[in-house]
Image (cartoon, helix red, strand yellow):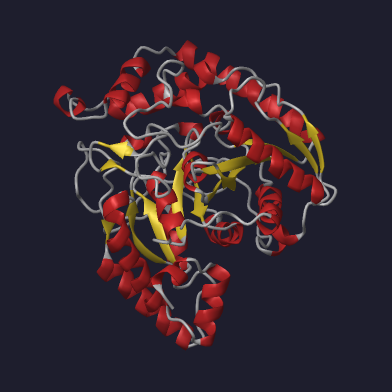
Length: 463
């Protein structure tokens, strides 16, 4: 089997092949490492690859499968970790020249859970500096490029994870999401990404963006995402916010279809400008939902304008991370991140509480809509992946990266679960995506709807 064929196998296929001996975790790890070696020079998805460690993990997995003692279906499945999370023994550079190369002495909970499940972690993926924006370039690693068109951004901040997913460099990919950073690169890169309810996936060290911070999966399929969620949602005492303990099965619950579901469809979240191709692709997928038996009505969440409030919360949180740096260190930082720090240090506690009041009002608006509907669907992002070199798609109308992603960051403020799923390719051959938002702690219903679409309208495969 070629590396390309191996890269397209999901968790179900891999675990079946490992169990019957037709494939070995070592075969798959070696194929993953060859794919990284052959493709990543042009794409820049990884900042660290540890071949020796990955193969050691794969050999241990191979022995467990041969002894009929595998830890579960993720045993021997390849994974990557965004370079904001800790992996013991590896440095955490966070896309910054101001960080050091000292190895972490402990792993983040999401990494511990993957290792406990036997996953083979091949390396760490790129992020913009401190994960501050929706792109994926940094002073440390340069540009990460979109594999559908290397002149364009893959989105961010989990851009490396999304590229690793869609190219088959790794099957399970850890991203993080403070304003859309799982969903934006998933949308631009044609992968599937889920931002779960806040704290559903334990996060440690605490996220730099506070209550906006989430960590979660980016995969090539909905079932792979569900497999990953079955492992990474286990409670961890290092998560500082209360969460829901939930031992229900993740896989069987997503196969029930959507007949009878009540789904709200908001094409614009009130007034967002949407590329006509994206709008048409999402509308067509809404038709698929109807064909599958869902009751779909057009309805807006009616939330307040969150832009300025989000930026207060964002600038305060991200700016704080730079506050201890010297002037010389800030001189080598991303200028946009420095501007964030400069705005953040001017904010007052009153500004923060006023922004938090907008967050509360937005949460109530989405809660109200989701008492009347089971799910809310919309575009994931309203535009196609745009050229590298700018933080905005259109400098004449946009001042900040949040201006081109009006569907994602409000859901970080409200902390609802939301997924980005591919819904087709544009005339230029670029992925387009739908966002599905669910009630708090109702990720399974989000995945169930996404799975129904995936089966009826298979996701595009990277050539």
